Length: 256
Image 1 (cartoon, helix red, strand yellow):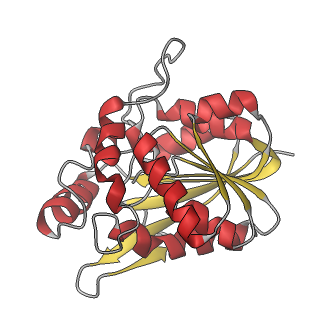
Image 2 (tube, rainbow, N blue to C red):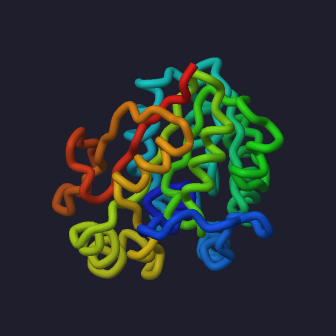
């Protein structure tokens, strides 16, 4: 999901390697357009973004448990309409949220006026912010975003640059295997209609081994992983420490 989210993905992590982004930003205009079109419904809990609202407490708790965010500088890469960003700010973090979609950022700022939660929203790529503020953040979050960009490895490397030595980084995305295709695309988009059809592209899903490789290439230490499962009967999500077959999250750390 853009916010990275159940609805938002931003990466293109097939087995293809890193592509050069020297002359163009690491942005897929078609992916940006998907979330621009849906932006007005970002905070509607009965809209296409309901999955993001449902899983946000689970992910926020996971992050806060392993990296208590109160008093910490945190950046939400691919923040979309600000669901995770506001949750982290409510827990006492000083939050910067970045996204390349103008409409989601506008919605995030409007909701900020309603909620009174302070977040510094900026239209920026991870690479641009890393060049401006290297090593500035205690916690770096990049959730449901990697499957929506042309070069996810570049985003991971930029996130590594954004983190201070000893800082923690969180990446979430969708595995690439037949089960993930059945659950995340056929099930979620066409049968259960949890997400709009066309939200995900199977070729952009990312195997944990691929993401772990990019994490190591960026000089980070892989600390742990957890899966996110969904029960269609109870309509409940839960974190699962070993089931990373569909949605999953990795925690990494920048060496001191």
